Amino acid sequence: MGREQNVAIVERVFGGLWHGASKMEMLEELIAPDHVFHFHSPINPIPETGPKGYRQVLEGFAAAFPDNLATIEPVTVSEGDFIVNRWLFEGTHLGPLGKIPPTGKKVSIEGLDITRIAKGKVAETWVYADNLGMLMQLGVVTLPT
Image 1 (cartoon, helix red, strand yellow):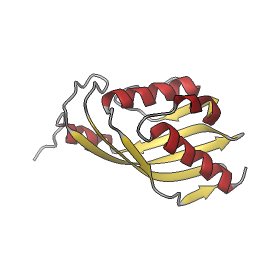
Image 2 (image 1 turned 135 degrees about the vertical axis):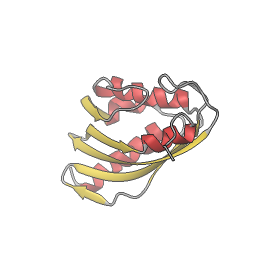
Image 3 (image 1 turned 90 degrees about the horizontal axis):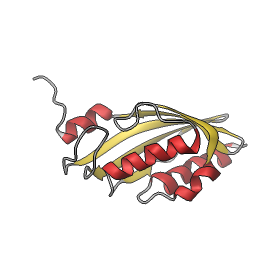
């Protein structure tokens, strides 16, 4: 697939799965059966593979931040089957985040994804998120002064 097709797939993932109310029916269409998440979140330290694992991560964040809004910046790096994009995730912590009870606090988290596309679907995702910043915004972690 070409750059434009790969970028369009990544944009559909963010627009359909991460932006507010997820359209879970898009999972099978966009996420490869053997998709692997390369990141550790407070919700699922090691999610399952494929659409089921992707759903676990989406549902975990939607439960913790029901008013979530994820925005993607225009893709700036694309090489072969790999796409790199910067994103912003915002929401109010109204549900459990793993073992962290709801705090009612708003968070704004920046991050980067590296996505590998294979056969028209997302095959791997590496997520680099500011989890420390999120935990500090929630008030569950403080840095020594």
